[in-house]
Amino acid sequence: MSNAAGKRHMGRVAELGCLVCGSPANVHHIRTERIKSDFLVVPLCREHHQGDFSIHNSKEQFTNIYGSELHLLAETLERLA
Image (cartoon, rainbow, N blue to C red; front, side, top):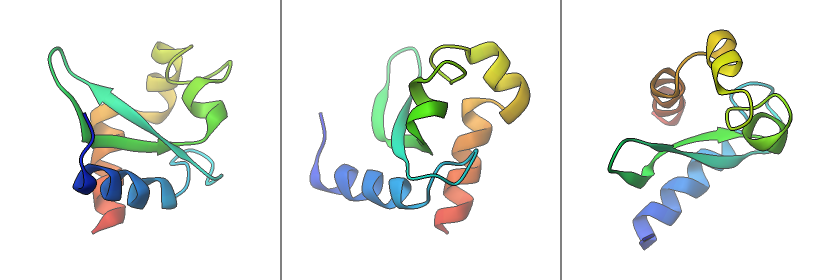
């Protein structure tokens, strides 16, 4: 469930642009075993989010090249600061 603060945060994250290529971005939710939060998101363009070579469709390869979701989250938070 999204609340106003979560939506604002996701908007700020999307404005950063894709962490991989800098293109306009949507947000990718990092999911732990039990938690899906609008504050645990990273900005990825459509191709790097859900394209042929993406975090959803080639997760192991994507992670080997660009880092883990937690690494990407740390980079996102650093850019927001």
